[in-house]
Image (cartoon, rainbow, N blue to C red; front, side):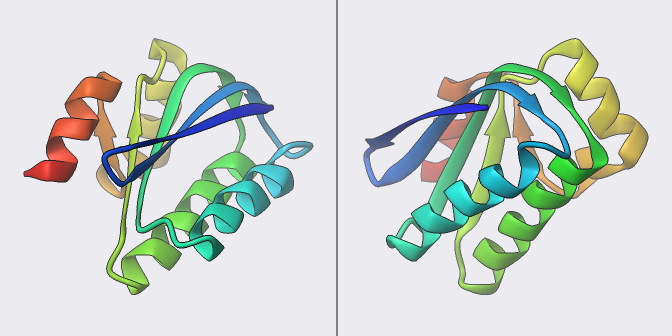
Length: 112
């Protein structure tokens, strides 16, 4: 996995690329937690470049979402491919996380 991080109006945006699988889930979780440790309270993970997600990758997202929620923060996810969207539906995660079709849509929802 690769990560490109930027700040847009106080929202930490992480654009990911690659496979979020058992090999990369620990690194992904550590990357996201590092951002939270650095003070991020609004986290947007852009999945436009993610080609695969495993149950370990899903677990990493849920762990980060729970941590943010506990501290009053918010995790949003955007730009899922059809294959990744299907995994989220099949696992039930589509109802557990805030998911948006585009980065722009997700950014608008942080404000609202």
